[in-house]
Image (cartoon, rainbow, N blue to C red; front, side):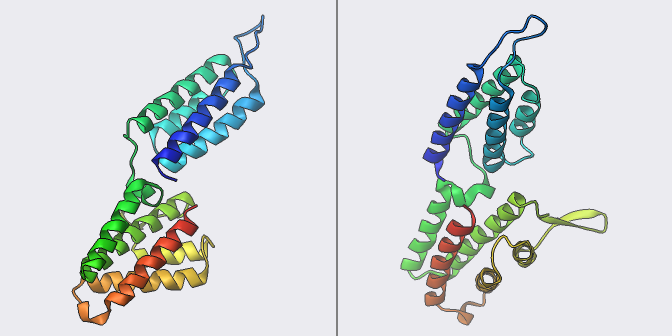
Length: 222
């Protein structure tokens, strides 16, 4: 999902929200209200979208969640206003998160940079770049699947290493054991490049790594 896809999806959610507001009914006993089923459907769709784009810890998520906790008209209006705010951010190009690397246009830029480096014979920085993209997306996959990305040690939280993330993802069946083995191999190649062990792998292996990582991330991050 690229920026144009995010823009299309937020337009769809706005249209859905407008439809919810159109179900307004008056009550002589209380405030106006909207169809509760329609609002519930909108709420689920928008919260899912916000979690994907911003993450569940973002203020948009908590604000929309709180704003639409009832089916009064003013609840639906608050929710609509938040969706409009998100649309403005997307249309203005302000939405970017490293954890969404695989779904953002910047992801393609990184891989194109790595491919350019490879075409010029610079296999070592290319391997490091591809491996870094892979690791960041492992963290995103963990977050999306409610897998901790930190561990507590001596009273403080530290980030899990990429190998641990890989193991946890396979254990949770986010992807297969075969995928886990491939990721382990790619991370090992990245580590060799990062630690100057340049004679322990070839450019051809980095080429295969690039192709494999692209296919893997496109498949598991959908």
